[in-house]
Length: 101
Image (cartoon, rainbow, N blue to C red; front, side, top):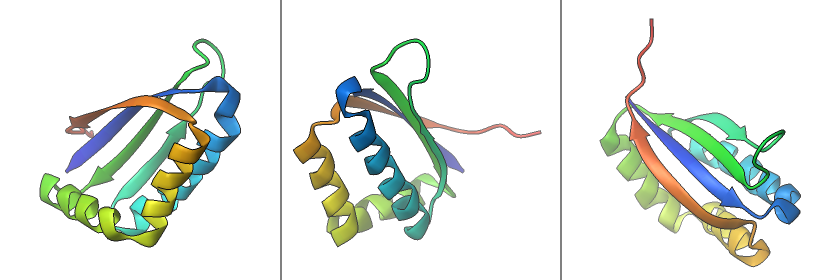
């Protein structure tokens, strides 16, 4: 199992746009074989930092998702929405292995 952790630097003036972007991707990741654990938006503290977590059964399954997302019209539209609204300034992606009880 592999969990993808995304750290976003967002435009705090575009928080509503980023929320819409996140809502789109939650459904898309789930549809394309992953399990999305949600987006985490600023509440207190830094106003320009947000996070997301989603899991795939393996790194190979994640790579399949990436290939599918590159050709999926809804995924392409979500990427274009972020570019048009400029709600994301930059992001970092990390791969984690979860430990459960």
